[in-house]
Image 1 (cartoon, rainbow, N blue to C red):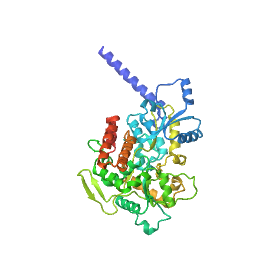
Image 2: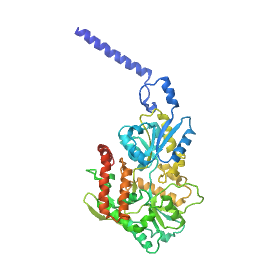
Image 3: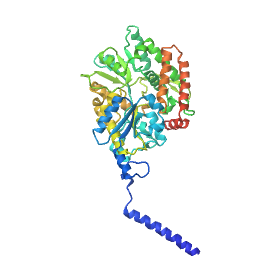
Image 4: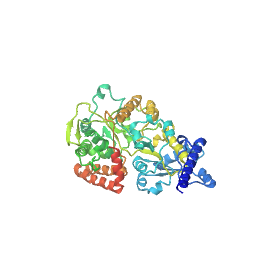
Length: 479
């Protein structure tokens, strides 16, 4: 009986080997040539027909005008119908996960998109698609938005780069060499002109969440850190660092710089700042470089300079200040709330979804969407060679050249690179809370330290409202 049992096992083994050999001879599907991932069980012919005729669904965090433009361009390039749902930031923050997963494609802020990638809800982009779009040429600061570990799940549509803009037509070369290069020089110039003019001559973007970004810009210049998250969160505990000396000094500097003029700056949009500088009403403006439309004829003769630097920096490890030499390092602030496009894993129209991503990402089509996002900038290296087409003909050639330098600076980790506010869920709420703290000081007269302590407590609450382990994973990834 034992011999018969052994013979049976031998026959089974031979049968398995034969089947494996036959499968090799008949050919197995090439994984590289496999279609984009399709989810779910096998479908009937009727279900497949319904799927083929079903519309592609896009969830857009943006304006209805942008939704209409995307729909027109997508449907004009194929036979798939596109249904676009446009919602605002507040709706996006509170939208239940089940409702999000009902769509095929997301065009939304990167903070929640990153959390969806971690939870396995986004489709990993196919290697063939990545090769077609030359991901190696994307700016490093942009690739971080949609990449988790070694996989890419989303593509950024641009992050704002900050610069000092001044009027090239009204500034001679001698005067240009004396323009503020540090935050203290900027404050001195503002205070000097405040004594002689009621109209602000040195502008900063304080509309919307501009005050929060104004503080973070100064913190980036003031803080010395070898890791991306050290400026904003403690490396060990993950606690916010809003009560640290760089934040306190940044808010004190903002208050001392503008004082009563802050109320006027509060009402000015980015385009208002550009208009004032280009018309000669103001000497310079510190702002995110916008994409301008080409409605108005002519060229704005403006020039761009890198963000302001600090004369000293704070080291969080030994809690000391260090005096910096003239021309110290400059760095860019990347907030991590810019728009990113991603495909959900549960979509049954992945091929059409990829085509929609191509429409949104690729030049020159993406230029058509530029006017709807004032903070968007080119995100691929090859676009920088023809920057005037992307930034608008209202910019001068000199401005385009300076913009390439700014993009290079932001991508250069050795010379300073970009300091990120990590894309945590609730970042838009964090910026709103910091903005409220700034106005509590500028308009309410509250001491900076007290306002920042209250804001710190709010940041802790925001983190607790989301999954603590998710926040920890993102912070560890960004260290």
